[in-house]
Amino acid sequence: MTDPATIDLSKDAAARAAVQLVENGMKLGLGTGSTAKVFVDRLAERVHAEGMDLRCASTSKATADQARNLGLVVMELDDLGWLDLTIDGADEVDPDLNLIKGGGAAHLREKIVATASDRMVVVADQGKVVDCLGKFKLPVEVIPFGWQSTRTHIERVLEELGMAERPAILRERDGKPVLTDESNLILDLALEQIHDARALARGLSSIAGVVEHGLFLNICSLAIIGCPDGSVVELRREDLE
Ligand SMILES: O=C(CO)[C@H](O)[C@H](O)COP(=O)(O)O
Image (tube, helix red, strand yellow):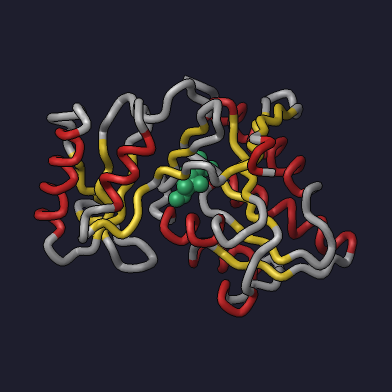
């Protein structure tokens, strides 16, 4: 297992590099999770040191609280309109910069904010880079009403795609279902390997009780991967930049 201290240095390296992409006057989307949290810390340092004028939209209540406590201006996405840049973490990043997100149960707002931005950049450590998406359980946000029927529909979609008998697990914490910022539930799909992410995304989106899945396809144009020695590796999708 990777040493947690090593992971922290990597996150810090990615966050520091990402902060350099921010320009004065930008409207910025802020992600959720431990790497996004480090980014917000580094961002606030730069904003105060340079007297930058930024307006931010947050992907979660947790990040909004953190950013406001650090003196950043956080507004409603609808009051900001279109954003210049969103910086967020990811649970998996494949060679085409397709992602799995939602480990922090925030992928619905994360996708809304990322797709309301000119550019989405991911900050992550090397452990997130994979050849094929799917080892990390795919989060699917579902509405509580009839969630077990929704789970049955999800399992049918998986069966149709040859991913049969893969359980959709209700996410719980301390014996209680995890609720998203939208008061919905999360089903985590244990898939191992997602060979046709587009078909899976289509299938999941066609189910009535599914609010949003954690596949981010063709959204991220740059992934900044932090290394424990403080260096970073940049993975790019030129066609999305
Ligand atoms: O998608 C997310 C939250 O919904 C996070 O960005 C993702 O889980 C990565 O988090 P971390 O940086 O803590 O590993």
